[in-house]
Image (cartoon, rainbow, N blue to C red; front, side, top):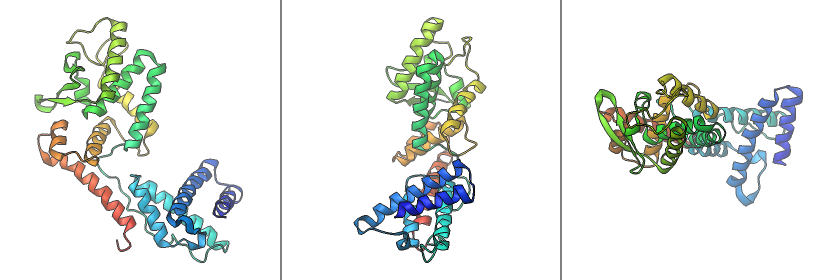
Length: 303
């Protein structure tokens, strides 16, 4: 019955309001998410739309927030739910709009901008597909993305890397940071594997690289420029990120935020990022605290 009400609403949007197919599908996804949640929320007791109250809607928003969805996405889904209940109330299916007085999470971009772990996974999935069909350039782009995220590098640091800075046997990279400060950063197995494949194909294409040669090269064999690196990174970000305006530096923010979310020590993150002051690193702690506050605001009855 619940599904029939949703389908009736979607027909209303398509046939009477004449909304675009894209918009109707977006409403459908939002309401499908709600239906799936309510089925678990009410369990074996069964439920109808008239059973749904404000607390159930708030629980749904809490569920969304715990999934690390961005605030504007949660707000959009709440708007879809409100409009659906307004329709049900007008049709006499429910006595009241359960979502009417539920507040949306406060808007405003959390700084610094970053990609979610799910978005990063999708980015590397696409980079792998690109590597499989674009020859050595695809392998280069995938290796560049893997290293950027694995080591949390600045654009300038990535641009300045030479072959000698990479030690794949030890799974680490020597980074030339701000103020001529050097640091050694470990890298994971995915980055090591991607870099090995790229290095093999680069050497096959241009001959064995000298230790003083640039790590990432263009088709002409010269050092990949900052703009070229940006173009590669932002091209992939644009394919996966919900948030607009993200840049190459956003991958560095993602590196730090994801480490902190997984329980890494703030001082360790400071060393990995090459920050001279802990206060600079603490903005990532603020980002994670804001996520917790978001969950509290949408979930607690007296927030």
